[in-house]
Image (cartoon, rainbow, N blue to C red; front, side):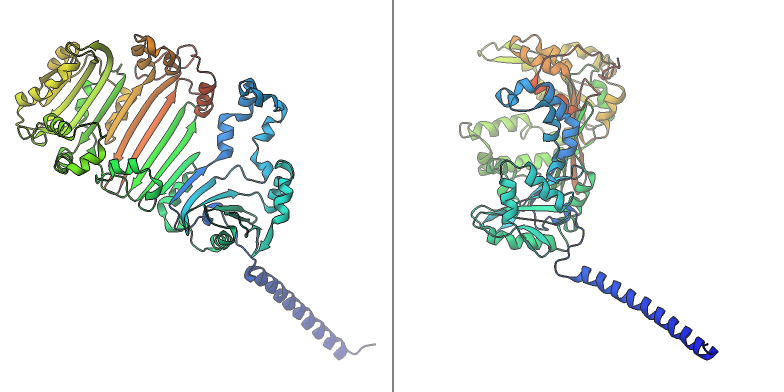
Length: 542
């Protein structure tokens, strides 16, 4: 029998041992965690976008999963497999859905695939970033789904370095590496894999990539549009065609800084948005709303805006004085002197300063046109059915302005003065415009609201254009296509540090995704039954 003192000593010893064991376990666990975090091979969880280099000059983003679903690609191919000709005979209709499933390759379909360009030693390096389900899924995917033994051959050549698997060396101008989250492929012409391998490791290890260096790019990625393009226009000069650069680089409005373009495919609608950050603000502002009364509700083509004529005049004058700049823009077969003379006559020359006469607010709407043979030349000239107005400044010389706009007579228009504007319109609109300053049935509702707030806006109604083109036999093939389309609108919003261009295409069918409709139009351009419109030009429900 143990004494009370011995029993108490053993209990104390046991308690100390238990406490020591707990402390030791915690220390071991902490050591394991520290080793996992600090070992050289460890890679933090990296999103595909964080691998992009901070000095990238261009990034193209595509959401393949979204596009496949929005196009209904498996069903579309299955229903139209006969249009693929001989290639269609080699496809099992029951396997089409699996062909369109990129997850079979271990690639996620809910994240974008990114293509980027960055400066390299031999020119530009092109990179591709794929979001992965995980490493095992990717390796299994390429082994089971790449043709022949290609997948096995790739796996055999791969090595593991610094927590990445891939091919980091070789004679070919390509290298790639991947972790559990992303696959990065680099290609550089006239280079070698030996040179590109270190670049792969550098991009995976970088602390701050493009998203951290460029806030505009980060916002661009957060939008998650179906397709997207980001560019650093100042650094990507070599990627811009020389003809395009020569045409606009001589003006302060040539895009500078950063530019993003995004596309989104929705039911019955395609939306494209372009944002230019940097460069000079465009000389545009919203139009005076009172001018919208000259736009007929049944207009085929509409254009409105407010123009800073003083700024435009400064740029035109500079262009006319610098013959070398103008010569760079013009084709070789167009005489420079004739162009200078035409521009001077159009802007009034020294006789009339349009900036002192006009505010720059204008509204134009075309409802119809015809082609008439000119009296002295065998060239058909258009006869326009149009209503337009140009707002004048207080004290403007209305007679001189009316004479200036007489040039419209060559296409069937009349120029006449109103209270605070000059009209340029077809004879059928003159009486109403002189009496009330408005056409008989001006645009209203949502169609009018779309023209009010942008710095400039344009709208084209395709079904109305089809009715105009019916009088021209050569346009017959295009009419079924136009009848399936709705409207196209383009708007510009300008600010001191950015300009936003928005382009919207609508279809008559507002239920089916526009991507599916565009593909079907390419496959079969036949016209459906006509769809009725309301007063604003919107299709009515069944």
